[in-house]
Length: 117
Ligand code: 5GP
Image 1 (cartoon, rainbow, N blue to C red):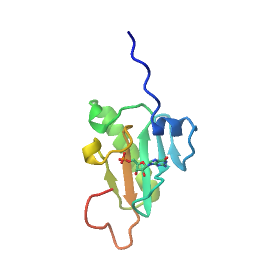
Image 2: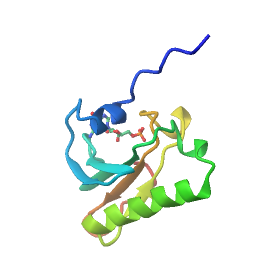
Image 3: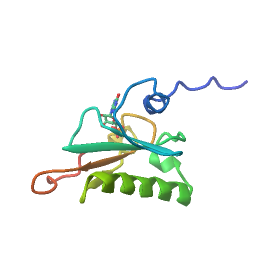
Image 4: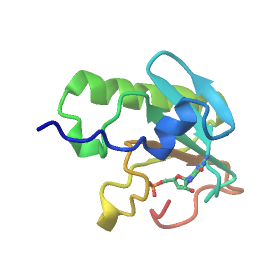
């Protein structure tokens, strides 16, 4: 028996333009949006269009590398210095189970202490 298809993730729905978002970057493989509840003056989410639920599901170095290269490219379009954060799994603070990298920055006088996104 075939498994019923999983419902689309929030980010798949944003990629499909079913849910509005402020898109700051898009190419064939990735989209970057402004976080709806920013935890820093600049808070972007870099999202691969191919679904994996969490970062450690990606086992291919090229795919993982391209995701990080894209996050760096997007970050550098908005910020000189920045923090990249990935929450992995519920216990790691992940709420949306579609792999994404947080780009955070723009703090007055540098980043606050701590690593929470
Ligand atoms: P996670 O906790 O999974 O690492 O991060 C999910 C992020 O998605 C959170 O920072 C949250 O504010 C953001 N988010 C949740 N819903 C929406 C939405 O509908 N639109 C946008 N742009 N961001 C969202």
